[in-house]
Amino acid sequence: MAGLTRSVLSDQLREKILQRILDGDFQPGERIVESRLMKEYGVSQAPIREALRGLEAMRFVESQAHRGVRVRAISRKEMGEMYPVRAALEEVAGRTAAPLMTDRVLDLLDAEIGAMRAATEDGDLHAQLVHDARFHELIFETAGNTLLLEVWRSLHAEIRTLITYASLRTELREIVDSHQPILAALRMRDPVLAGKEMRHHIEHFGALVMGDTD
Image (cartoon, rainbow, N blue to C red; front, side, top):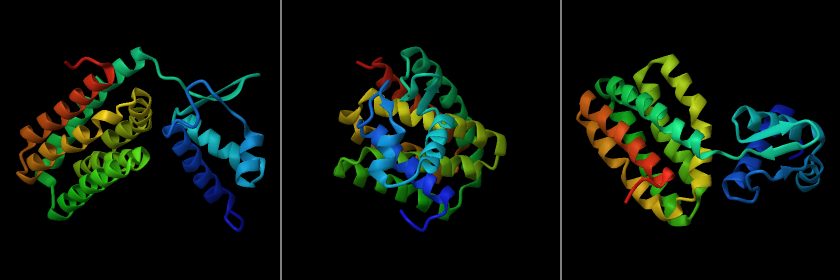
């Protein structure tokens, strides 16, 4: 990693540590030891600390006096509170974005579904989450509401954490396929249907996470 600026280096380290959290190498409640990471990646303390601060801002880790930095555990209550909020945001985004859809954005959305499917076949959970997030982000960007996008982004990292800790690996193909009705509604430029499909998608996924499905 030599020759990189500190900010670029810390960004790369943040993504590497994040992937290890998503892959389960670091478990909820486990301490992340700075000196160990410094040795593993051959870097100084400064970029490691910046990377961990970034992960703390994203709510993947938490730091406490005399306990160091640990992977943040997610409570069932927190999971239950998150999905209704996101479902409401997604419905607004779908309604707003549908009439503004271009063929280019639709092609990008289709490509993200394809990338999700390929990641699922490869067993690459981290890549699937990245492409899943980008699919939704494209819709929020198309909606053109800056505040809506900012609020969604504030939940985005948390949702990825919940996905991982819920261990829904057996449901991953179903999750990928559940994006298709959203894309179909957006192709029709139907705001009511697009909003409905986006809300249903998140509510169904939330039910999977919470174990409320039959």
